Length: 305
Length: 260
Image (cartoon, rainbow over all chains, first blue to last red; front, side, top):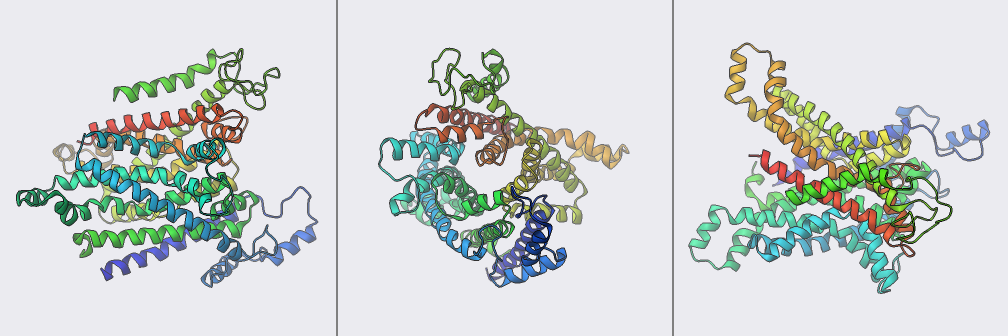
C-alpha cells in the first residue's frame, strides 16, 4: 500500500510540472498582452511596465523566477487587478469553489449510489428502467441548460430560492443541484454496472448457496467490489465538477475560481490564469491519488502489484 | 436502436434542410417583428431581441454544432487510430512509451488547456474543432491499440507474414480494416462529447463567434432573456439534449455490436 502511494506521488510531480510548463509556454507564445488597451501606450511607459513585472527578462529566467516563487506559494502580482497579488485573489475564490464542488460531489454520490445499487440489484425492473433513463438524461443535460432552467423555475417563477450571489446556505441550493446532476447520472450508471457485474460473480453464488441473507451478501461481499468503478471515476469526476463550476459560478454570480479564470482569460491576466490552471491541475491530481488509494483498499489484487 | 436512430435522422434532416424551407434566414433582421411571440406571421417560434427568426437560428445552430462535432471527432479518429495502431503494431518499448504519454495526457486538466488555446489564439471555428479533436483522441488511441495487439496474434496475420507481405502492408490491409468497426462505434460516441464541449465553450463566449451561431450561443442568448421568452432557452436546450441522447444511444448500440 505504501509502495503504491509512493509510486503515485512520484508520478504526480512530473505531471503537475508539465502542466505548469505547458501553460506557461502557451501564455508566452500568444499574441497580445495585458497592457493592450484602447489607448496606445507610450513606448517608454510600456517598457517601464514590462520591467516592473519582469517581462523584459529572457524566457528561461522568467520561467525560473516563476517556478521559484510558485514553490514558495507565491503566484506573483495580478497584471489587471492592480495592488492585488494573485495569491490573495485565488485564496478568496478557492474556498467558494471547493465548498461548491464538495457539496455537489456529496449530493451526486448520495443520489447515485443508492439509486444505482437498487437498479443493479433487480435488472430490468421498473426502478432499473427509471435509473437508466435518469443516468442518460442527467448526463445529457449540460449544466448551462439546467442551471438557467432551475433559476427560471425555482428562483424567478416560484420565488423559493435566491438565484445569485453568496448570502447564506439557501444561495447554494440551486448551484449545487445544477452542478451535481451530471455527476449523479454517471455515478448511478457506474454503481449499477458495478452491482450487476459483482452479482454475476462466482463468490456471490457461493454466498447465496450458503443461505446468507441478501442484506449480509450486499454488506459483506458485494458492496466493496461493486464500488470500484465509482471510485475509479473520482478523478474524472473532480475534473468534470471543476469545469462545470465555471458555468455555475458564471450563471449564479458566485465569486469562485471559475469566474476568476474566465475573467482572467478575457483580460489576458497571465499570472491569474496560470494560477487557476495550476491549482485545478493540483486538485485533479490529488483526487486521482485519493481514487488510486481507495482502489487499492477496495481491491486487494491491485494493492500488492 | 430504432427510436434513437429515427430521432437522430430527424434532427440531422431538420438541421440540413429545415432552414431552406423557412421564410427568414438565420441572420436577417425583421425590423417589423422585434421580440415577436411564437406564432407570429412568418416566424413560427417568434424572434429574438434584435428580430432574428428563432426557429431558423435554432436549426442553423444545430447544423453548426453538428459540423464542428463531426470535424473534431474525425480529427480525434485520425490521431487516435494512427497513434494506437502504431503503438500496438510495433509493441515492446515503443508501445510502452507511447501509452505512457497517453496516460500522462489523461491526467491533465484538458478543458482548461482548450480554453487557454481559445483565449490566446483567437476564437476561430477551425481552432475550436482542432483543439477539441486534439483532446478527445486519447480513448480512441487506447481502444485501437488494444485491438491491434489482439489482432496481431491471429492466424491471418501469420499467414500474411508467411506470404512475404511487409509490416506496413499488413497493418494497412489486414489490421486497420478489422479495427474500423469498433473505431467507428467510438467515433459515434465521441460526437456527443464534442457537442457538449463545443456548446460549453460557445456558452462562455469562447467557441463559435457571431454572426455564426451554435446551440451553445443560442442557450446563452436564451438564458439572458428567459424571463420574457422562456422558449428561446428551452428550444435550443431541447435540441442539444435530443442530439446528445440520440447520438449516445446509437453509439452504444454500435459498440455493443462490434465489441464481441
